[in-house]
Amino acid sequence: MYHHSVKRALSLLLFFLTFYFANAQEDDLFEELNSLVIDEVIYSPPTFKTLQIANLQSTKMVEEKEFFMVVAHRFGYLKEGVREFYGLDQANTKIQFLYGINKRFQVGVSRDSYEKTYSGTIKIGIKKQSDSFPINLVLYNSMDINTLLNKLSYPGLLFFDRFAYTTQVLISRRFSEKLSMEIAAIYVRQNLIDLNYTKNLILPSASNLDFITEPWNQYLMAVGGRYKFSKRISLNMDYAYNFSKNKNSLYFNPFTIGIDIETGGHVFQLLFTNSRASNDASFLTETIGNWLNGDVSFGFNIVRVF
Image (cartoon, rainbow, N blue to C red):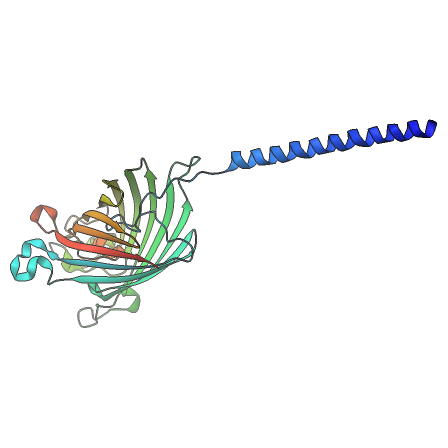
């Protein structure tokens, strides 16, 4: 009788211990699941649908293992009239290939007929807009090589004089389903400055050294935005202000108006701009067109995703 009582007591003890630990594990599981829900980050939909707002780089990244091809055309000024077929006879063409190494890192190479320029680019995604972070933050770098330069025009030309470098910090926000905005802090280094693009040609000397050295390192601030009219069509604009441009410079700040049209795996960007170049350093610091004088050219970008 005693042994039966002990067995019953042990059975009841094991039952209660099993019930206790089962409940404890269940509580731990619920706590873990709850923490996962609390810690889950909800990211905002893409701020921009294309890699460029118009001419200016956007915060959009090439996705991991995706391959992009971009064909960009910039024509002559519309005011050239019928003789130059409203600028269409004066086309500059850039072909660019981009690849996403991972979700935060993309690389690209291109060739632009403007100044026969070869370029390499890197884009790094730092932070994405989410319910816990209000902006997109992206770092962009490019290196351009101008192969049009020759020693006949520049007798002292060195190989690295052909190089130009651009660093951009891109900050964007998707304010609503229709409206997205971006600001960009930009640094451009031109290893060679052509003094012929000043209103008064001044040769270098100790007294005017600032005149020619200041433009080598140029600092700009750019703004851009997109407003969607429908699911597949949007109006885009971007503008860059050059703080370092010399007062005697013949260059102007680039301003571009564009329309994005999405068609399946393609995005067409129709542009009106005062810049004839597509590569970063050139369109930011070598725009010779003035909107106020009617120096507006038509252009387009075609983006194909593979």
